[in-house]
Image 1 (cartoon, rainbow, N blue to C red):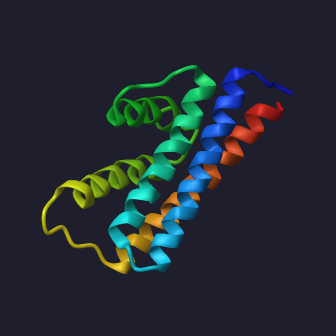
Image 2 (cartoon, rainbow, N blue to C red):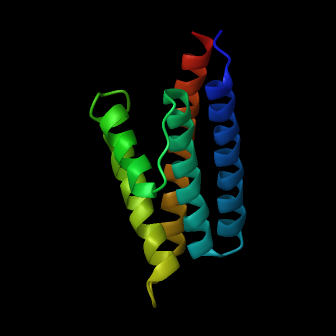
Image 3 (tube, rainbow, N blue to C red):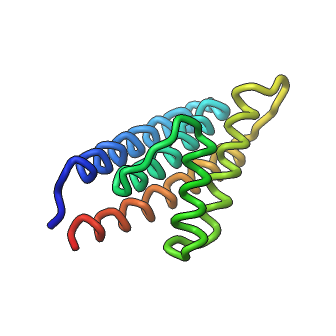
Length: 134
């Protein structure tokens, strides 16, 4: 079983992603849709950074993390192409909710982002567990 600093960082980031997912759900349940979307995005983003930790990679900008994830894990076929769409769309929606005036989101929008974040987190978590225990 592989256990080193990269593994520790990956597991830490996965825990942080789970915490953000839990926050997204609380916000969703309390009708704070924009903030829920933000937490869902950060759950996805942090799960992606957990993967990068295993590769010894990180980037100062969100776009760098997303680009690396797509190049390394989507184009190579490790993960289904839908996860590329999930992270890209979550990034765009989160930017809109944080920075665009009068950007309206519905409960359905927030629920969709939350469900995608759960699926993304679960998929990354399963993959990392296999990598760690090989």
